[in-house]
Length: 285
Figure 1 (cartoon, rainbow, N blue to C red):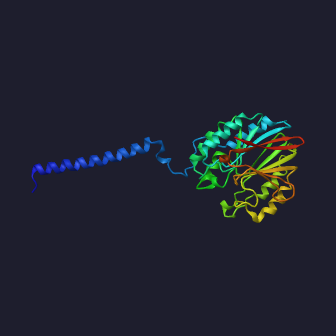
Figure 2 (cartoon, rainbow, N blue to C red; figure 1 turned 45 degrees about the horizontal axis):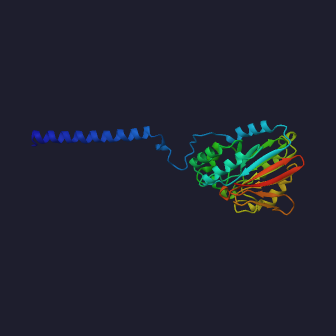
Figure 3 (cartoon, one colour; figure 1 turned 135 degrees about the vertical axis):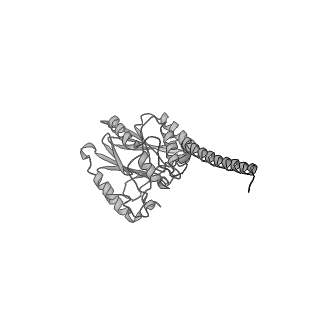
C-alpha cells in the first residue's frame, strides 16, 4: 500500500503532465490561428490575395481609351520567368517610351507556376504606366499554375479591339495537355473571325509558343495556318517562348511571325500600327 507522500507526488506528476499536454495543444492552436501564413505555404495554393480578372478589367480600359484611334503603339514583352531585376528594368524602359497605348505579355510570367510567383510578377507589372494584358505560357501551367492564371487573368483564349484592330490571344501550349485538348483552339479562331465584325477591319494574333516549336501541336500546324486565313486582313503574328528576338516567315507565304525575347535578353518589341501598315521596333534596355 503506497504512502500518502508517494500518492501526493504521483498525483502532482499526473496533474503536471496533463497541464503540459493542454498547454502544448493550446500553443499549437494559437500558432495555427495567429499565423496567417500557416495555411499558405504550399507552393500550389490558389488562394490569390491580389487582383483578379486583370485581362477583362484592362480590356475595358484599353478599348475605351483606343476608341476611334487610327494609330496604335503596342508593346510586347515575354518570358519574364524569375528574372525580376531584368523585368523591373524592362518596365522602367517601357515607362520611358512615348505614346504606348498598352502592353501585352506573351506568356511565361512565372518560372514554376506558383501563386506567389504570379503575385510577385504582377506587383512588378503594376508599375507600368499603361494597362497590360497577359497570355499563359507553358511554365505558367506547372503545378496548379493554370488555375492561378485563370483566377488572376481570366480565360486562356481572349481578344480585344483597339481602334479598329482586333488582337486575338491564343493558348498554344499543347504539350501541357498531352495533346488531349483543342489547343490551339481552331473553333475559337473561326468564331473570332466574325465576332464583333462591325468593330474591326484588321487582325493581329498573339501566342506563346509558335508553330513548329516544341510546345505547339504540330499535327495541326498546317490547319492552324488555314484557320488564320479566316481572319480579316491579318497583319502579323507575335510569339514568345523561344527567348529570342526574330522575324520569321514561318510558312513561307509572307505572313510574318515576330518573336519576342525573354526579359533576361533585355529586348522587347513595340509595334506601331497605322492605317497603311505597321512598323516593328526592337527596343534594347
